[in-house]
Amino acid sequence: MRKIIYIGEADGYTIYFDTKKKYLLKSKKSRWLNNEKTRNNSKYIIFVLVILLLISSLVAFFAKDQLFSSKYTSGILIILAIIWVFEFLFLTIVTDRILYRNVKKAKSATKRELGKAIRNNNIWNIFNNKKVTFMKKLFAWMLTLVVVCATIGFIISLYLANEQGYFIGFPIGSEIIALSLFGVLPYLTAVLIWENNLIRWFTVVEKYQNKKMEGK
Image (tube, rainbow, N blue to C red; front, side, top):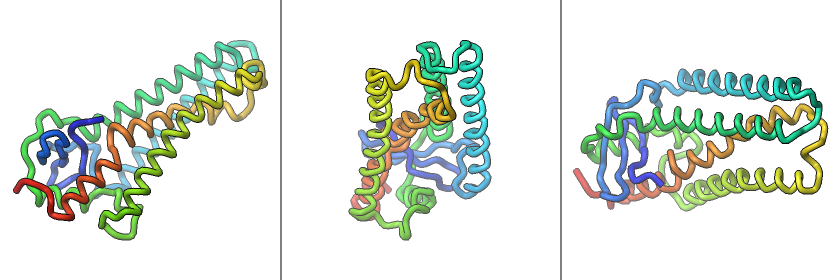
């Protein structure tokens, strides 16, 4: 997991917390990162996802036609795997560039900036208040567990289905569109564990709210 984790935005800076040195950091934020203009950012996110969906669907159907088969083959599976890897890498790299682009140039931040970054984080939009509670931490654990299990479960299910003769050789239907988007699941796993760990975020926020955070 990352040593330096993203906390939020404050006064034109991205605020981080160094979990190893227990140190607050800030760096100039990416122009793509602006919690105060979430609606505008959402348009870009939706646009990227739509383009990704179209590309994945077109490639999937192109593969179906070009391999002269209306059934799943090892060739189709390889193409799907390539699509999944592309989706995972593309989305992960974009997220990393948005959240951590200037982290190597980070300098020390203050608790005041940390507090503002915490309050500005869009995570709070899910809840009815901005106080860390047991239920919020449980939600973070459950969300992470569900996404990780869904990712692993899909791979296991696909393997077992093939072993029982329910994949390779079966007719290709509209489900190939959903299959072509599987790369989003491992991406979400990477986000929740590596890029923007909600569990660790709540730990830092709770420390700040309980006035146990060191620094100025």
